[in-house]
Length: 219
Image (cartoon, rainbow, N blue to C red; front, top):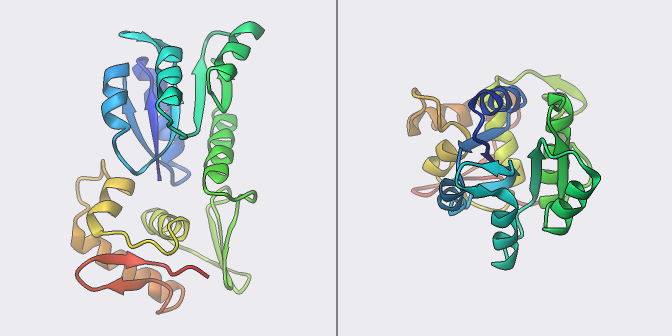
């Protein structure tokens, strides 16, 4: 599940991108309302982080339009508008959360995670699957309460498949959702990651749907 950041300040966007990548979150960045509308066609987008002062219009109008169209995507407004009335207007326009610039990166990431959990119907930060526990906050995987060390790219894949339980994901969907900016990721690389995850955890955790992709069955 990807985050769409709509922010015209490239320094802020770069800082956010680096921050979320360190905690196995994937982000796509655009700098205008028109580009945001195009990017929102991506079914993998799970959260919108929206600046309000954009070069081609007001982010609040975009937010109102999206809500009017029935879009239920969680939206976190990220803005320098810090008056109480501004926050009220933002929330009343359909925002799920509202964070003032300048902001603390850890707080931003915590708010993003909270909205993503709500989106997926989970209250707890950790994901539990049988004897497996994945903690996105601590970047840890436990199997039978024992820590398992997994490289970041494989951690992202495991989290993605756990969050998509019961749904088959093609190799290309996985690449687009998790590794879009990595130039050395190809479909056969995904096969290697799946094989390594099976060795780290257990062989039947990830099912291969021959000719289609991979899934972790619902519990």
